Every structure is written in C-alpha cells, then in structure tokens.
Length: 115
Ligand SMILES: [Zn+2]
Ligand SMILES: [Zn+2]
Image 1: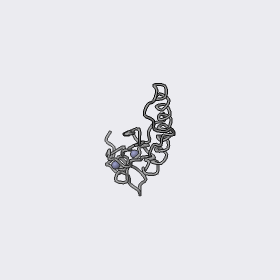
Image 2 (image 1 turned 45 degrees about the horizontal axis):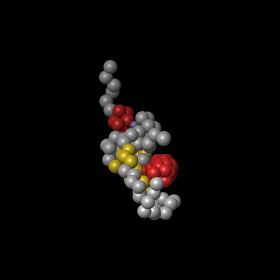
Image 3 (image 1 turned 90 degrees about the horizontal axis):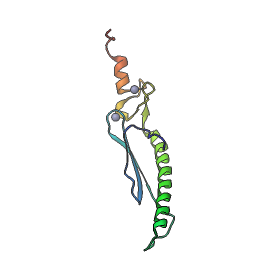
Image 4 (image 1 turned 45 degrees about the vertical axis):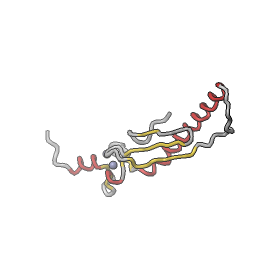
C-alpha cells in the first residue's frame, strides 16, 4: 500500500463504510475525514460457507485498497504542502504569503543563526 499523505492517519473502516481520517503534520488536528459507503457486490444470505466468507473478505480488502488510494488523492487538495520540509499542513499551520509551513517560516524569520 502507498504511504498516506499525512504522517498521522487513521483507518476507521468497517464492513459497511470505508473511513479514512487525515491529520495536520504539525498541529495534529484532524483536517479531513473521507468516507465511502461499501456496497457489497453479493446478496445477503443467511448461511455462507467458509470459502465464501473468505472470498467476501478478499473482495472487501480489494475495495478497501482502492478506496484508500482514492481518499489519498482526494485529500491532497485539503492540505498545503510545505516546499521546504515536505510536510502536509492545515491552513493554520501554513503561511500563504511565504509559501512555507509555520515551522519553516519561523526558521527563516528567526534571529541570526548562532554558531
Ligand atoms: Zn495544523
Ligand atoms: Zn516546512
């Protein structure tokens, strides 16, 4: 699986819903939660055999992986990417004018380097 867009990421997927939450790399605030309903391509049945259950699990996993990739693409637009450190940060942690995240912008503006 590909790396999540943000360092902190939560996967709260269930059998009914795929749910992915992405957090700001600096303040750790949840910036975006993406959910997709999972529609199983098979009918509900009272009895399912072991092998059928396994097949359903594999289908779910496969769809889960596609949902995960889709969520990562969608969430890219919700974050600002700092060109200096590569962190994905929320609006609060991004200086629009300087085009840098809070941490890097502080370093640039900070007092002269000591040593
Ligand atoms: Zn933030
Ligand atoms: Zn930065």
